[in-house]
Structure formats: structure tokens, C-alpha cells
Length: 279
Image (cartoon, rainbow, N blue to C red; front, top):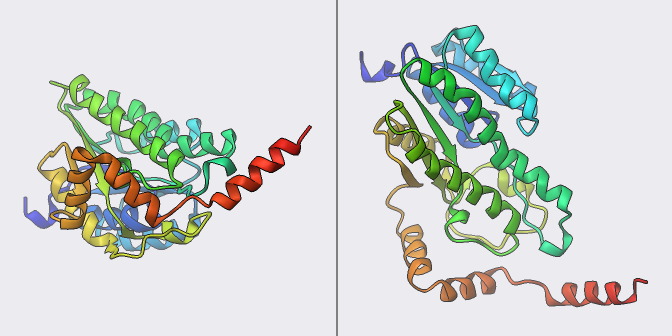
């Protein structure tokens, strides 16, 4: 089989496929010969993507819905297995941001982030593993975040959702031994995606951002090699330094992060006064 069609005969599910890393990964998989099932909420975007996918992979489809809904998440995998007879690749890429002071976040909002960013990947993985085991193996790719390695200010809930994904994926490395099923964990750094325009409060990061297609190419290359855990883009000096410093001097990094994106103490005090005055 040529390298151009290295995914021929495989069925791949990609969540969060309407934009960013998910969209680019879906395109590359289709060009590689895979039958791609693109999953996201925005049906109009999925329909536009499908026209591109089917140019390379005519059997590709999309499924529009909310992956944070347990029934939909599990139902996606079940439908794909019934329609195509197998599930070979599952890329759990769906995610939502939450950049906001912890005092302004409700428990319900935190739960919603956990459902999209972590629980959806758990539900789809639980649904896919039996089919992969039956057919001799498969690949589960969970897209986390560099923020789970070096947590930014105002990201406590988002980071928690990604750290939960990290722990789940690392646990799968042991539990899936001998099954032929490979689990991979991906930590993208600052990537040029829609997430920057969806922040509840302005973010302080002003450095370089990297194109989603570059990350998608590196993601699939690592997947082909069955790597366990990667930070993308690869060989990024600034990301490497940040990880190294956080490992040996976390207090220094926390101080730097707090300085870059400080907590507004006036807002904290105003909230305190409101709470004091509340009967």
C-alpha cells in the first residue's frame, strides 16, 4: 500500500471536526484513504467539510450533535460500527474553553466543560473498545492541552478537564496491554483555532500560534508510530523550557504565569464586599 493511501480500509471517527485540529485531521485521514466520520455540533460546517472528504473518500459521512450528551456520544460509535462494520481510529478532539475567574464560574458550568472535554472521550472510548478488541486492535487518540502540563491563570476548570483526560489515557496504557488497542495522548500548545475567539475573558497570551494543519500532520505521524504521549508542535523550544522549568521550579513558573495574566484584586475585593453585605 502506498504511503498516500496508508489508511485504506480503515474507519476513523473524529470529534470536534468542524474546525481546527479536528477538521485538518479529518481531511488528512480522508486523503490517506480512511472512511471518515466527522462529528461536531455545527451541521453546516460538517456539510461543507464532507464535500472535501468525499472527494478522497466517497463513503465518508458526518454526524451532527452534541458530544457532551452521553447518549449521542455512545450512539456515534454504535452507529459507525453498525454502518461500516468496524471502528479503527477514534480521535477525541472535541473541546470547549473556559477562561474566567474561578469566582465567576458555577458548578453547573464546570460540569458542562467536564462533559465536553473529558467525559465525551470516556464515553466514546468505552463504546469503541469492544469493537476494536473484537477486530484485533485500533487506535484511540485523546487531544488534551499543553495547559494541563503548565496551568495558566483563569483556567482551573479547563485544566481539570484535560488532566482528567490525561489520567484516563495513561491508565489505558496499562489496561489495554495485549489487546492490540493503542491509546495516545496529545498536548497541543498555542494553535491557531477558534478557541481564542471564544474566551469568556481576554487571554494574556500574545506569542506565536501554530497552524492547525501542521499539528494535525504531526499528530497523525505520531499515531502511525504508535507513540504514547506528545507535545505539539514538536521540538518547540519555548514549550520544552516551560515544561522543564515547571518540573524543577514550579513556584517560579506559577509566579511568571500569575504576572502575565494576573487575578484582578479589585474584582476579588468587590465580590468579597458583596458577599459580606448579603444577608
